[in-house]
Length: 189
Ligand code: HEM
Image 1 (cartoon, protein in one colour):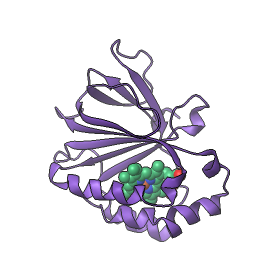
Image 2: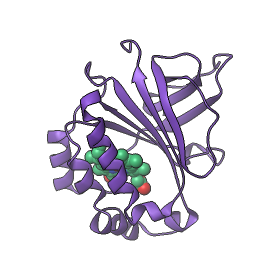
Image 3: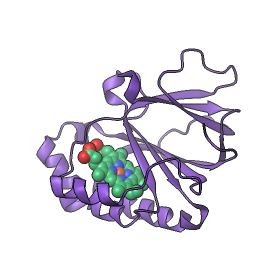
């Protein structure tokens, strides 16, 4: 699992400086000034770290072949030099969501909420990486850690995207959400 694991370390160090942090729904995280995004596990956290969140990238659950191809043709990679803005959005979905079947979830996710169609409008401005937490155990505070990178001039595209998604039926199943906005202080890696 290690190669798909990422650890987000909130504290006082790291290349990403926190511009704002907001609990959209549910309990907030403790406030930090910086974030480090570490590929793999962090065995010994920095002493000043306030929190560590872990997630794994995974196989896709919902995309159709056609959607997968359209996404692949349009989506940029993370780490673009001009994409110095980032957002870490932490989400948990309710027990009601997890009790649905796969086809019921797909229907809410795309046929009724148009998550992929809305998301495509933000490409190629916004790069993204989705991390899953549920399969790491029962102690994880969120189900998903979602990571986005974009240039400062594209911040409006990102804001419009989150506004539309939050108004969707899919989001009625979100029961905890925190958004952290960041700026890269120095080149990563
Ligand atoms: C940049 C534009 C975006 C695109 C193109 C996009 C696309 C996608 C796609 C294709 C999936 C399904 C992956 C699968 O098949 O398993 C997905 C899942 C997901 N996305 Fe997005 N997305 C975007 C923006 C966002 C934003 C802004 C958020 C958070 C506010 C978000 C949160 C999620 C979550 C939590 C999932 C997992 C849903 C679940 O498995 O229940 N996405 N996204």
